[in-house]
Image 1 (cartoon, rainbow, N blue to C red):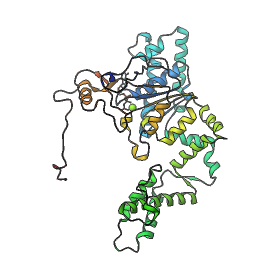
Image 2: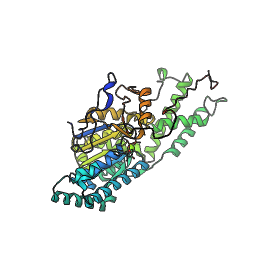
Image 3: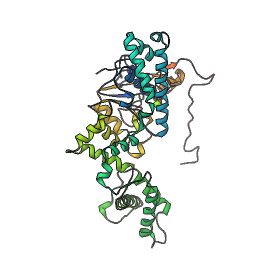
Length: 404
Ligand SMILES: Nc1ncnc2c1ncn2[C@@H]1O[C@H](COP(=O)(O)OP(=O)(O)OP(=O)(O)O)[C@@H](O)[C@H]1O
Ligand SMILES: [Mg+2]
């Protein structure tokens, strides 16, 4: 399908072997199905979510409380809330003002391009949305999963005595110290210090999905420093899990796995998924590249194929690879999507800088051939700064740093 992709294709035509992407038009038909928008920094990803939210509401596709907007991290959530609020406020004000159909703001002009009765309805829908702003679901992925768990009563079903803990760092440290004493107290020169063991344990626990390598040779006693470190990491992970269960503690990752399993349950899953999706008509995820595979499975089971799902991100900006997100979820979603498009213009960087970056990185595949640096046009044609080269590279060799 081609919803919202009315601005032609991006500028990748010149790059051998890189397929062009349709450019998403925020004033095109509103998306339905599952749309993935992959776009670079400063091309208006968050802007697009705020504009689409305003259109979904004003055009009567959904009330504000029927939209779920998800992003990564609390700071991003509050930025998204502010930007949606500003967009709703400015659209409502513009539609009440003189000649909205000739507005410079293309979204306002589009919304005003209707007969008088529909224009009145659109104003009323926006005014209603402004009075409901606090009821809007604008949250982090964790926040959304927690809300869903509470509404489904899953944590209580699994373990009525369970206590939620936001941070298991103290428990991991305690486990690590106990295991250290058990393993190394008789050794005059232990191969690891207590803090090295604690670091290993923390890394193994915080990334549940990481495979601990190298595999132990023959399952026997550790025979190399690598095998010793592996054993310490694995033991800390296993023992932490055992103590969490014994103490009836649940952390965020446990909740996520429980929710995923509840939705995938062959008997009760469909009813649970229906309950999760019943409140929402449209779900939009900003910073989607930082969604991990478990979170994506939850979103997919709950919404993909059932509700309008818009997933916006820039895999080049993935900050979460170290926790198992590793853009796998992003690539899966791209495969499942009914439409994949991009945003073709940077509103932040000027043209000389963008062209210099193209020369350096254009067409480069970052870790996966499906993640390619694509050129973007510049909204700012000239240099935004006086003088000097748009981009300078400094090469620092290992030898210059005194490293061999
Ligand atoms: N279509 C547009 N028209 C006018 N200004 C825009 C448009 N799109 C984005 N902008 C402006 O460009 C700036 C960058 O936009 P935005 O923050 O939405 O980009 P982003 O892709 O989300 O960036 P990041 O990758 O950092 O999250 C903002 O000031 C925004 O208001
Ligand atoms: Mg953004």
